[in-house]
Length: 348
Length: 287
Image (cartoon, rainbow over all chains, first blue to last red; front, side, top):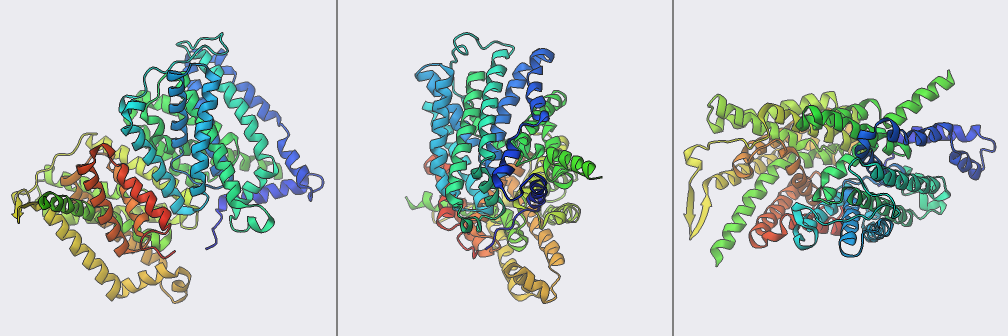
C-alpha cells in the first residue's frame, strides 16, 4: 500500500522548491539549508515581543508562563507531526511522564530546577525511545489508535498507582528551589514566566537547528513518502525512532516546567484532553513551521482565558468552531494562511 | 461457582452488543471511504437525547421513540455529510480527525446548552424492568431485550449485505473503489446511504444505551474511545469483525471491572494495544 501524501504538504514543497530555484545554486542542498537557517527580522521581532508581558501585562504573567509551556509542548508535537508526519493522539503521555518525574524528583531528592528538568527529559526520552519501536512500525489509523491506546494506558496506570502519584488527588509536596538560587517563585509568576520563556527559547534554538539540518530534510521526505525514502538512503524507521525520542524528551521538559512552576501535578497532565488540546493548538497555528505551535498556543490559551470568564462549559463549542473553520478555510493553519497571502502579494 | 461467571459473561455480552450497535456504522464507513469519523458518537448522543425528550416531555412509549432516534441521527448525518464531510474524502487522516473532533466538541457543547450537564433520567416500561432467573442465574430483562435487538440488527445487516443489490454495491466499493466506479456503481451515493444507515444505528444504540450507561453531554467522547477500540480491533469494514471485537471488549471490560476493579479501564486498553500490535489491521481486517 502506498501512503497517500496529504495535499496540504505537497503545495508547500512546491513553494519551497520555487524558493530553492530562486536562491543561488539551486542544486546545492547545503545552500538551501543555509538560506532556511538565516534569522529573519520578523523572527527576531517575535522573540523580542515575548519580553513585552513583563512590562505590559504584569498581572498576566502566570498565564504567559502557561502559554510558554504549552508552546514548548506544541513544538515537541510539531517535530513529529509537522515534520515526520506522525499523527499522535497520545502525546500527553510524555508531558505527564515529565511532570510526574520532575514532581517526584523534587519530592524525594531535591528541588533544584535544572537537574529535575534533565531527569524528567531523560525519563520521557527513555519511554519515548522504547515506544518508538512500536510507533515506527505503523501508519494511518492504526498509528492513531496505538498512540491513543498507549496514552490511555498510561493515564489509567497513573490513576491506579495511588501510592506513587496520589491518584486523582494529584501529587502533593512538589518543591521548587529559587531559580539559580536567587529568584523565588512568586505569586505573580514573574520568575515562572522568565524560567519557562528561557527554556522555551533554548529548546526552540535546538529544534530550529535540527530542522534545518540534513536530518530535518530527510524527515520532511519521510512525511511526503515513507516508502521511497529508504531508496535514496534515508532509513525511515531509524529516523522516526530518533525524532520520536527527541520529541518525547522535549514534551518531558514541558511537563517538568508545569510541575515546577505550579508546584503540583494532576492526572490531567496525562489526559486525552491535553493530547487533543495540543493538537488543536498546533493545527490552529500551522503544523510544520516551528512557529505554528507557538502562535497556536498563544491564541488558544488567551481565547480560553477570555471565553472561560463568560461561560466555562461552552469553551468547547468555540474550539469546535475553530477546528472546523481551520480545516475548511485554512488548511495550513494561521501561519500557512498568512504566508499564502504574502506570497500572493509578492507575485502580483 | 458457575452462576457468577455466567452472569458476568452475560452482562459482558449484553454490553458488547451495545458497543456493536454503536460502532458497526463507523466500521463500515471507515472501510468504505477511509473516512475517520470521530463525531460518530455525537450521532449516538443525538439519538439518546431524542428518546429522552420524546419520553419525558411528550410521554411517548419507549418503543415508539426508537425509530425516531434512528431517523433523527440518520438525517443529521446526511446533512453533515453533504455540507462538510464530502469536501474531505481525499484529504489526509489528520484533516479528517480534526474536522470530526471539532464537530464532536460542538455537539458536546450544544447538548450541555440544551439539556444541562447532568445525567438524563429515563423510566423504562414495566415489562423491561424485571429479570428472569434461569438455572440459578439472574438475567435482567432489559439486557435480554438489548441482546435480542442487536442480534436482529446483525442478521438484517448481514442478510442485507449478502443478498441485496445495494449490499453487493457496498461490498464492491469496500473491496475496490476504483473498480466499482468503473463498473458504473455510484460510489458516492452508496457511501451517503451507508453513512446514514451507520449513523442511524449509532442513534439507535445511543437510545438503547441510556438504561445501561446513562446519558450526559460527554457521551460523545466517553464512548468514542470504546467505539474506536471496537473498530480498530475488529478490522475496518467487517461486520463479523465488529461483532467479535465488541463481544471481546464488552466481556473483558465487565469481567475486568468485576474481578480486578483496581485496574479500571486498563484491561481493555491493554487488549486493544496487544491486538493491534499482533494484527495491525484488526482481527478480521484484510489490509
